[in-house]
Length: 170
Image (cartoon, rainbow, N blue to C red; front, side, top):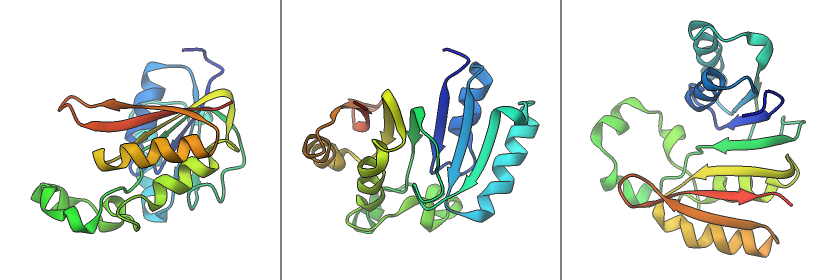
């Protein structure tokens, strides 16, 4: 990957996705996170992984509210679970993950919709949004992408579930 790439880890949580990118590239990575209590964890993970903090920026944001820049890649793992499907979630996940990191309104689709609707304003031409979601969200995502005049595709995970979508900027 090019060293001048600008990447946003949106809904960053602990920053694991962005940290992995920083470890394997020379890219600049910003971390966008709603929960202020997670920001020190992201900073700690940057430090403990020996990453030059000049290559990072940690931003407290409600999805796009404090994100001023454009990126080549936005990597998003938002809360996307529906309370109605709680029985599918492993008990250890429920015991160790904050409720706000897992569940979203509108059958888990609320933040996904907000992220996709704002992506075009935050992606460079030819940029990509990669977003994790429930299999049930695959069709609504592609319908939304089509209504917005964008191009997208959904991919399966290692368990053969439609788990993430890639949306291309124009």
